[in-house]
Amino acid sequence: MLFIEKSKNNGGFVLWGDYWTLRELHTLCMDAAEKSPTLNHEGLTVSLAYDLRKAYEKQREMDTASHFDEEIKIYGVEQIWPTFIVQLALLRTALAFYDSTKLEQSLMYRLEHLFAEAVPEIFPKQSRNVLMAFTRLAGIQEQQVEGLLGSRVSYFLSLTKAKRASELANVMRSLDSVMDSFLRDHPHHRENSFDPTVFDGHSWDTITHNTKL
Image (cartoon, rainbow, N blue to C red):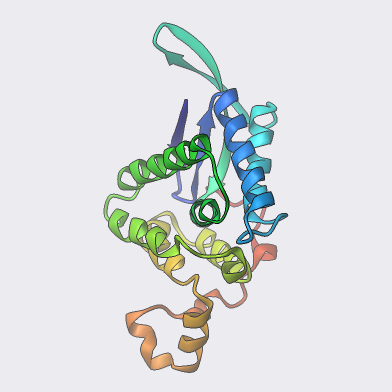
């Protein structure tokens, strides 16, 4: 069992799953970080694995869910949209660089399916753009985005609920270091792309602990 529960303010969601599914996803993330040259072995994929482990170790959220006539325990952990989308794209890329198993591929497809099903429900007006932004990110290596992600996450979380919904796709599109540099040097092109200066002053350090997702 695996599903997404949307947050109240469009900042993220709770990823819920049963013990064994979360364990399998944790293993997938750790193995990918160890085996794929596209990932930092202590980076974003390992951060996702950490969240999953904390969930199934009962250190985050817990509930029960009905499965046919059985009540099963489920475990949840909060995720932030821009971070999770990047982690998902990095995992997809990583699996192409080592001899992954059919189980690993099935887990990857399951995560992608979960994401593709949730986005139209949560962001109905922007779902196409958000899904396209994810497609553009598929194929990236971690070193290409790790220097930009913190500022994008901080900026995204500083927005109102409505602005988060309308700007998520643009925030994801901005995770391009070449385009970021180009637009800084050529401001007249920003109208058709994005303004990279809005992310200035934002970083992982500027995210407050009381931010509401």
